[in-house]
Image 1 (cartoon, helix red, strand yellow):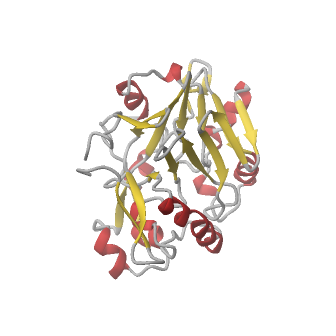
Image 2 (cartoon, rainbow, N blue to C red):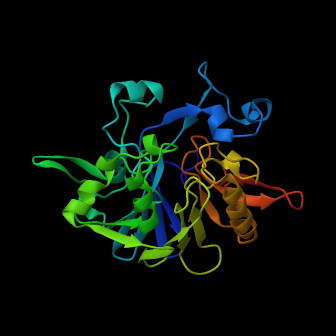
Length: 294
């Protein structure tokens, strides 16, 4: 791993400075992570354990933008049950998200905005922490940015994906009055823009990063491209509610990311959290390391 992709290390992107701040790693079923892609193919690039699980990171992102400090997603958190920690093989004992933020030179109180790509439990677990009077925002000075449609979907508790949603991860934020709702896009700070990227669900967002100038663009891909190996258009999770829309969204974005040499952040990749997308041969896309030594 290069200095650029080491947890907490500053990654310059024009006027922005980025820090990878991963929470705990975990594991999910490989078949679910690759959908219709046969195991004989995906197991060549992602080895599974005896329970067919592949390793998953929770690569959250801290963005310095002028005087603003934006945190993108908040990982697994600390409220999973013992049974869930065993089921998902959650790594325990190592640094967690608040520790990573401190290692980057900041405290949770320094975060001014929390931008959530969606509300699945592995993306918003540190939104809240236990306080003296109940759950309270982990980042007390921050505004929390949530897509309106995603909140509405999460509150409906549909059978297909209800287990992915934990109201304790967002309802205390509404009670505290710290939520900013948005529709198709939002810009909490200069150069940091969330845009709707449907497929995984209707209102998941990716986050576009623009530090100004040549070579200063990046993207936090959330669950549109959860790991670098998911760059090819058909490599789509079975967790996606609308896989045909996922493919259309990938066809919309991936060629542009390749043409512009964007820095890509793969939220769930333990091996290659940062990369760039190349088109080789024509019409076929894959990820390569972002920095020498990765």
